[in-house]
Structure formats: structure tokens, C-alpha cells
Image (cartoon, rainbow over all chains, first blue to last red; front, top):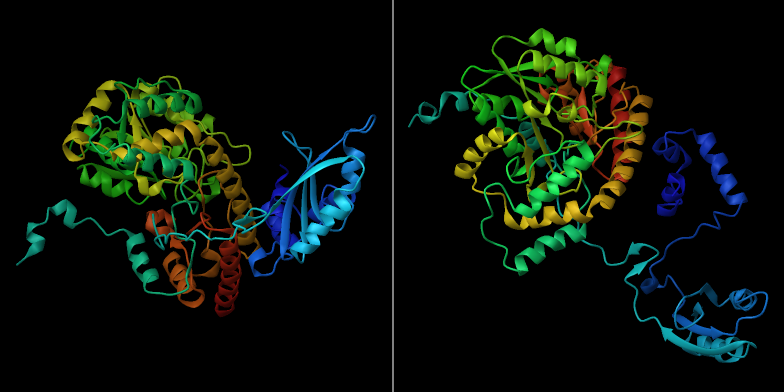
Length: 159
Length: 392
């Protein structure tokens, strides 16, 4: 991966001056490159990574396995795009294996998520079935471990 | 009781390590950011730790062969052939040791008669000169210069060769300077070694950590050198395994046999679980090395630029995880600078003089510390330099 991208993925708030130093480049060059990446859509956005247990996400998160009927000409794309448009949907992926779409949905109450599934998602023509799994606890969020491994103390000065 | 009378003269007269001195001062202080650490800040990759645990589970807790586990020696043989282009027979030309430190001691004790001279480039790792003295040899330092990016030139080496010269010690990439050695100069040095019948002890513990376009060449791979080289390597730096204490020496069978004699009586064998972990490192660890190297490289870029920006001239080292900036523009000695920085700004660096007198005017900063810490350290160092230069 482009070293700039891996630095930004790790911490999108790294100051331009620091990025330039780490990449052995200039502030101006880094600024231009980031602007390009934003313009061409490789960088989609910047978000804070929050701890779901401390109110960092809405109360209920569900992963829904959805089977759909592929269509002539477009495969799964039209239906998947349509499902992804709902605000409740955080992520939507086409999967290999026993079902077609993995849809991650957030809501404030169990009721809210349930009614999204039964009234909106399941009623879309082409959706064959859904299987819903609710999240119980988070251990790692976007690459950040929520249970920190204690760092062993190193000696302060060694040869 | 006069204890000094009972301590061997050459041990009594051995100076304490300058690093140890400094370590005790740092230990007494709180909230110190340390750039003084000569070991990776990464934890040993989990699959390697797990291999040691699995070894314990299976009851791998007995002695191994004096030379080390046969499987480990085979993996080492393959690894050294692939990365350094030199073939060693796992049955007779490889010995697994307790870190490279033990291997250095074994090699020197195996090679030296009292009064033999050992050449080494300086600034250098703290143990070289004392190890030579403990083996009853005479240390002969060849100073390297910042103007030449701390490489060893054949010319400087030639000036120090005498009829008593027996061994040349090399350490590239170098602790503490981060210097690397290019192939052309290495070839000239090889010519000198052949002409003067020197044995070369090459400590290549940092060889996986080279950056930019630098490619590492082992002197053992230069024609005519394999037979007169003891190649030393280990797992501490590349695989972040310092506490496992596993290193190895590769050398022609008669030299390996000589080292093995000392090893078998002094140590018997390297730690068995650690050898299990080392096998795992060689079989599946190269991806980890790559990831760590990329991280080190970015930190190096950051720290070199920061030091130069704040007025401490510093060449961009191509290897290891150290930078060795020149601090003489502040008017302070290495020790004054390091102590002042520690007391006023709680940042620990090691004075260059800990690595030999030719380190005066320099400090060693390790970037084997997280970037966040390095960033704070650089800010504090900038304040310190600004405050010191106002006074002069």
C-alpha cells in the first residue's frame, strides 16, 4: 500500500508536517497528493474510531445475511445499491458462500432494527431471505483493540 | 578484606560501560522519554511467542546438541544462503549461541593468544573492546568519521595494521551510528584481510534493517573471504526477540569446532524453548520483519529531518535503528548534552563517548520507540538546543 495511505489509515489526523517528514517529502507535495486522493475518491472520508461500549455507536448493531435474486444484466449490483442507500445501513458487502449480501445495520432499539428488517429490507422485491445476528460485545473496532495488551516495561537505556 | 587483590587484574582494570552509568541516572528519574534503548519496541510477533509456549507444552525442556537444534541449524543455513549468498553446512559450520554477544566472546577466545591485536571500527558497540581484553587480546580502534558517514575505509584500516594484527571486527549496519558499508569498500577491506592474513568477525545483527536503496553485502560473500570469516547473526533485532537470547555463528568447521569447545563447557547449549521460537521465526517470520522495517524507515525519515531542522547535523543512516547526530554546534560535550537534556527536558539519549572516544561530539538516538514518543522528544530537544545556544 502507498505509505501515505497506510499512515493516514493509521491516524488520519497526523499533521501534514509530520507526514512530510516521515515520507521524506515536502508539506506541499503531501497536501497535493491528499487532495488528489480525495478528488479521485480513493479517500472516501475521515471518521473517528469510537468505543461502542461507551456510547460510541448506536445501541443496537446487527449483521444481516441476505439472500437475493441476481438479475440479468446487473447481477447483484442494483439490489445491493438499493439496500445500501438506507440510512440504517452502515456497510453492505457482496459475499462468497451461503448467502449473498452482508448488511451491517445500526439502530437505537432492537425494535427499530427489527422493523427495518421486516418492513423495509425483507419486502424489497428480489430479497429471498434474511438471517439476523446481533452484536453482543466489541473486542476490536476498525483495527483498534478495545482491550489493551499491557506493554511490558523495557529498560530505559540499553546498549 | 582487600577484594581488589582477589580480582583478576584485567577484569579489575576494565572500565564500567558508559551506558550502565547513564542507565542508573535515567532510572532515578520519572516521566523520561527514552531514545536510549537498543532494542525493538515491537513485541515479539505472536506466532513466535506461541512457538515457545508450544515447545513448553510438548516438554521441550531438555538440553539440545551443543551446536543447537539440528532443525534450527538447517533453517539458519537456508536463511544465510538465501539472504547473504554464503553456504554453511548445518552439521559442522553453524553454532547456536546465547545472542551474538556470546558468539563474539566465543570467537575472540577461540582465536586470540595473549598480545594479539584486534582491529575494530569506532564508534562501536560497547562490548567489543572489553570482550577483546577479556580474551587477552589488545583492542586497536580504527576511528570512523562523520564526513565519511561513519563507514570504514580500507585506507584508515591499513594505517592500523601491524604484524601483531590477527582479527578484524566489523559491524555493519552499525550500532551506534547506523552506518552501512558499500560493496566496493568492503572488497578493498577484504583484499587487506587476505594480504595480512586476518580473520574477520562480522556482526551482522542489523542486516535486515537497511533502508532506501541500500542493499546489505556480507563480507563473507566476497571471493576468498568465506574461509577467513566468522559470520555472526541472531534474532534479537530483525524479529524483535532480544529477551530470547538466540544468536549464531557460521564459520569453517575447524573454527566452529574451536568455538564449540568453549561453548560446551561454558554454556552447554542455548535455551531450548528459545530455539523452538527461532525456528518459527525463520519459517514464518519474514513478513513481520518487513512490516517492522517499513515502520522503522518512516521513523528514521522523521527523526533525521527533525534533528537537522533543529540544527543538529545528522547524516541519514541507511541501517539499524539509530541516528548519530553531531551536537558540537551547541558547545557542549556529549556527556554534558545528554545529562542536560535528561535533567532539563527528561529525554534520554546516549552520549557518543559510550561507544568509544571517537564518539565525542555526538549522541546516539534510537528510533526503536513509537513515533508519538519520538515527536515529543524532538520538540523537547529543540527547546533544549535553543536554550543552550542562547547561553553561548
